[in-house]
Length: 111
Image (tube, rainbow, N blue to C red; front, side):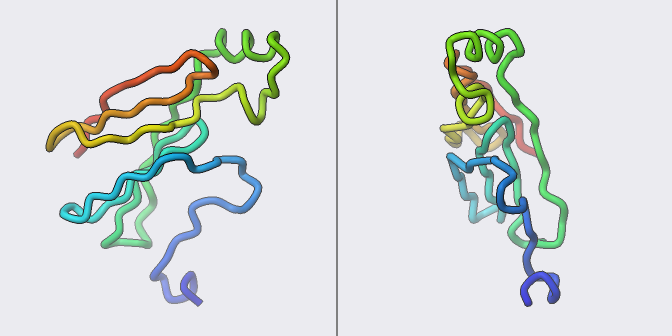
C-alpha cells in the first residue's frame, strides 16, 4: 500500500546483500544517510519518491584479491562495509569502511 500511494520507496530487494551497517539522520535537512556494503545512500525523507543518491565505494581490487587469497569469502567478507557515518561540519560527513581488512576513511561533501 505504501508503494502504491507513492509515500515510500523500496531501496533494495531482499537478498541484494547490501547489509546496512551505519545510519546517520539529519532531521534539519530531512535526509538519512545509510552505510552498506560498498555503498553509501542518501535518502530524502521529505521526498520519498525521489531516487536516493548513491556513492559506490568498493574496497581496492588488490585488497579484495588479497582477502580472497587469505581464504575469506568474497561475498561476505571481502568488501568495503561502511561502518561509520559521523557529522563533521555543516558541509561534510566523515565516513569509514572496512576496506576489505584495510580500513579506509574519507570526508563526504554534502550538497
